[in-house]
Length: 287
Image (cartoon, rainbow, N blue to C red; front, side, top):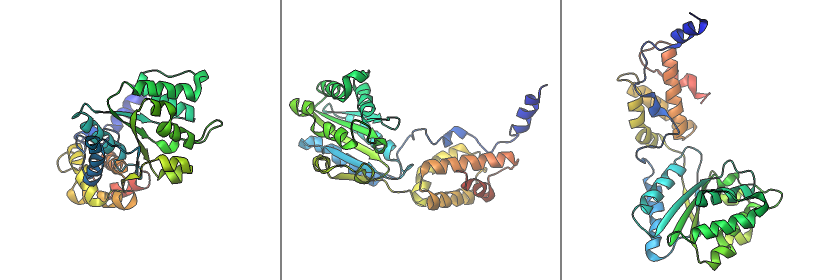
């Protein structure tokens, strides 16, 4: 036997507190959206503008991390698009983009399946975007996640990028009905310092996702946490203790899930039959 046989044997939980640990994966999409009914209604009302022949040029969707912005927005848009032939939805995450050109190229990739060469520049990327969208249904919602990661580069600034999306010649010439939904942690006017011509072209629709309170976290995470732990391994009092602390400190559902996972791991390491409040406390600072 090698030292690793001993190592793995020593760290294997004899009686795990977990029944289905993957239920605590903070990145797994939930089966059902909970605790965001007001925001779902706001988004649905905006989308139903299609029935009246109007979608706002932009919708600003903002709030702290872990508050359901992306999950809720994508789910509502996808469900609406599945019920009409008049609207298509595309989603692009811009977090890894390091320039305005790379952001436009990510959109081009999502719409066409390929990127343009650097020699074609921003003009080439937008020409391809408008050509692709001309074949789309009457309306298109383009969800741009992590839009606040777009920063000024040597050639362009965020205002130029957004102005082309909203008022680009190719868009206007082909009468493309595009509604750009901008997801960010802060209001864009604060994060990107947009100039007045862009602010004038943008819509005034804003949807805010505030931090979750204890009641909302209980509603959202209760089914997942119950599935994750073995019967009796997470007492109700300890669950409430963890929820209350997570709500007060973060209001972030992803962090709350991570907290319960780590607390369960601590219980296993200590060979406990159930998670305790001490297990929660020990993992608050490191989550």
